[in-house]
Image (tube, rainbow, N blue to C red):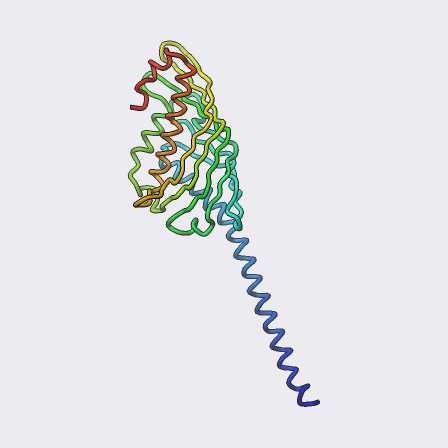
Length: 236
């Protein structure tokens, strides 16, 4: 019996050691998850603001990012693109809340995978003055950015959806006029897929141009022939 008892002591010590090791691993894992949760939201927020501001030539801000480190699903709240200098309204584009679903680990890699990006009820303000307009000015800045100039990351968006948007257009040509119209749906898919992965800049440009064209179309439609004539060559 003494021989069996003597063997049980190292076994107990070994069991305790294993428990401590497993507990330590679990603690580190929890710490990593907490760090990822904090860093993920910070990384996405700063990325949107920094790249957006560089590309548009005006301030792009986000109030808050909430993305689950487990599912990759989340919300981006208070997204705004400020108007360039010389325009009356503070923002050219505002959306209170839109949803995103991405591959979590891709955020830390060279290729960022977004499964879905859904924007609902965005508000677009177009100001047309004699020598130009705010949307064209922002688009001009985006178009002038060379691929890879702001980031070396690649971007893939499997599905982009914009619904229930509004556009308010203000014109100072031939007297002040305003038009309010609605944008029902803009849907794009497989952005960044194909032969070579597109840079972030190219995808943002494609989305921005599509939104601008649709906003112009519905504004002109609801504003009648007089507005249409004034805007016919706006984005040529």
